[in-house]
Image (tube, rainbow, N blue to C red; front, side):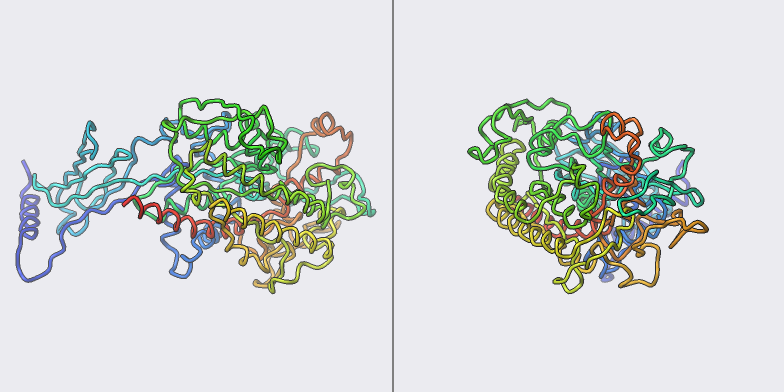
Length: 631
């Protein structure tokens, strides 16, 4: 038997709903949003952290929402950063190097979305029950129903892509209805270390308050390599198994790909700002990747791991488009070498391609590439390595050096490489020629510009005292900057030729936030101190390394070598040093790895967020254009 109080409340509601007087009475309405719009996160609560942070931003902050949110989240998570608690709950398999969820099989090709619905403007909603009914808008589907108190939100499953008709009844009478149709975007991403988030591990290294680390020898300038910050943990010697176990952690360890990547943050922002939108994100950016070795050909990544990437980035995306089905292997001997201008792609090039009938359509392609193709790391090394540095003789991705002329020769071939990539995005990933602006090439920010936008960081070792190998030369840095400006011009011109969207507005924001930026905006803080903690024999100077916080807001938006040591602190095992690198007893090499391979000269999380904001502005425009065309 229905209680009288409920019958009375129901009668009052129905009376109000049918009342026709001169007074305006709001009609009941349904509002809804996708429960977990950023589908990479397996826990809706993780997406909700970002959505709620965005909702709390003020009007001015929403002009740069990703940067504002990053700063807000950093204040709430001053230790390891916000990503540390989310990285183990993703639709990504580190064992298989594939996207997919443990408890669901439809990440790449969703069949339905959970949506959260709320009934508004119902009198006495806390006293009566409402029945929610769903009817698929496509033929053949099954509907459902759920009953709950009228003031309580309900969660329902809505078929994708057709959606469902949702109605609400009280006592068998329909009082509100709406169509719930989710717009699920496929955002794919590829590129190099600026895209992967290098320098910003999901879980940074932690340091002991008391222990010190010595690197066993004397630097070339006679400076003792002793009294360095030491990791926490039960390790006995640098590089032993207990030491390596506490290396910084990444979503993808080989590629140093993290949740702080501007590509991922842009996709996340697009997901949370529209209540009826979801985003399926697949990103394969990898530190050290080039267009040839990385995008077209398999590249094993930046860090030595047992299970490195097994596909090139383009092939990995093509495979993801196919979902559970295997993409075809196709040999492309003539398609992409540009009449011999890219000899590395001549003959024997085997790529994956999903059949166009099975391939999921891509909405946005985010790309950051070009820097490694012109050897920008070698330009940078020339600017910051002392003439006496042992790195100059060791070689490697950073040890090799060259100047503007060598970079200019490589720049001449970059246009052909980018045009080849355009062909691949169309031929392998099925992005139509007429929709080439869905491809968004992101510019590299300037590394050392002072606030006036003309001067650059002066000679010196500010931010680079971790090892005597580093000494910034202003003249050589200016040469590198000139190459960087030419790189930007080539990327922009080629983007216009290709019909791509070129994203570059963030470059202006990086002025005054380069590697030498210190206390220009804030009072003294550890975050803005360019020095590295060292043990003086009696105490730590200038601060205890245990107090370092990798992700608090700071003036500089690039990781210095000192910052990289304190954040990524990359080391390799003793056995690898001896067997692979053949550096018997060369403990000081670990110090170079800890300051270079840990993300030195790459954007901080704030810098990545600023880049993401620039991407979001252009992405909104592109998406709005195609949404208007489809209506």
